[in-house]
Image (cartoon, rainbow, N blue to C red; front, side, top):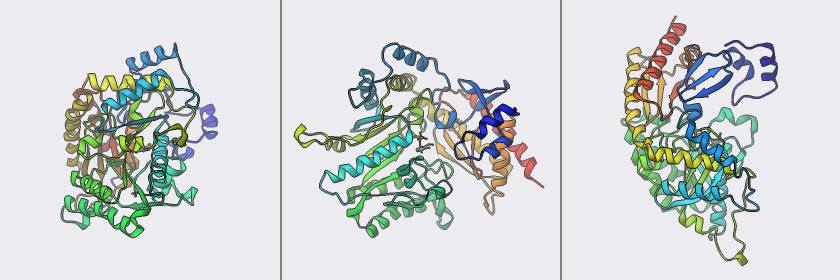
Length: 447
Ligand SMILES: Cc1ncc(COP(=O)(O)O)c(C=O)c1O
């Protein structure tokens, strides 16, 4: 699309997420409306939203059930500050979410997004140890290539250098290990590589002194880095390590939560439970900002006691637990459960993966990764040297938009995560658009 003078002027006065405005000018997208699986830009052009907003629109855009839930709630109550009271609907939301979380993970604090949920999980963990007789435990170990949010704590836990250097120094007490994809070529099997990478957490813990380590934070499937999908044994080993040293395991399920990987949470997909789950994005399907920190009962109970002890979680946000957002969250969960969208994500995901595997015929795809309706495709110059192909990714970003397709391109890989309302015919439409855009991109980069 073309930008007019006014749009250029106003765009210069704002700041886009993690991208240069001048770069955006070359390939702009100004969206006017969205419905279901599609966006329309201000010139009326239609785009297939192949990434559900940004792993957000679980139920597609403008889902009628969510709009109705919000409308109903607007007519009764739209705000109560958590300092003075709590909305009835917020209690309903906590109860509802607690019904679909795994095991005894049912102590819940709602928030307005992913970063807030992560920030809260880290503060909760530190305070938990302070009031449970191990005040020296404060460090967090996470992974390079991971992304946990933009606020200072969440950024310090994130492992994407480019997004951090402008804000150095980072907070102290944050350590990193590499995810399995980083070492895969040094091992004869993916399983062996995963075992090595899980073991690295223990090596760091021992050398840091276990009495100083509070938590491990990982995305079960890592988006930044290219939909990094470890083995089940990787999670099992990390769980054992956490148990051995009394370390809190935090899953950042801001992308993987709410049926995307074929179960309500990726914790269930991989069959290994954490102590805390952080949710966001898909929990509201993008209708309104919403996130949640979900802790296991034993941790939650440590924050409850006689009034004289004044034990409380010293943390809060004005808009967290907002009644409108909670009404939407309830409607999203009801829709997922009633329509069994977790099962659907598995079936649809297998179909999507098979179609993406078909792209290997072009000789520039190393691997198709992911689970359910969360898939990533790694682009390489050829499948012998496996050299990354960022030029192709950059071209793909442009050809996709030109062809009316929105996906996430990084540029050495791209991710696909359509809404769970999609049917097989929609997946075909999406994959046809991807294939066409890849062919067009190859034409642009091939000498
Ligand atoms: C895995 C993950 N964690 C945390 C966040 C931060 O969430 P938010 O942008 O809602 O603060 C994101 C956002 O992209 C994310 O992908």
